[in-house]
Image: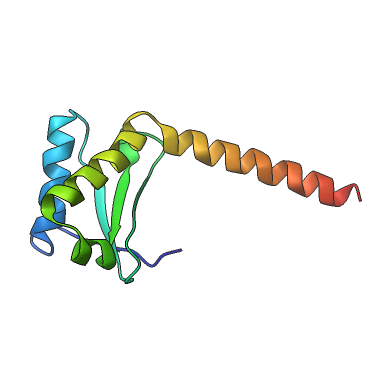
Length: 107
């Protein structure tokens, strides 16, 4: 949806290194790391569990924040994955979509 590009340690050592450090500290598997090419500063995580996670950051946030600030933002996003917030959000959105479709059909 965002046309995110997966990056490796050699392609973006700054971003990849921060995510690697955080995954090691949190004792969780290394998520896939993506960059979204947009000036809007944002970061997000997705995945049904830590083994199937992905973390993304926009070029806007990479340009705006210091490494320390970026580490804090990415730690927050990875905490969502570790606590399975991303899975719960996906389930809630699916249920809301089904309810909306049923409501539309019954009109």
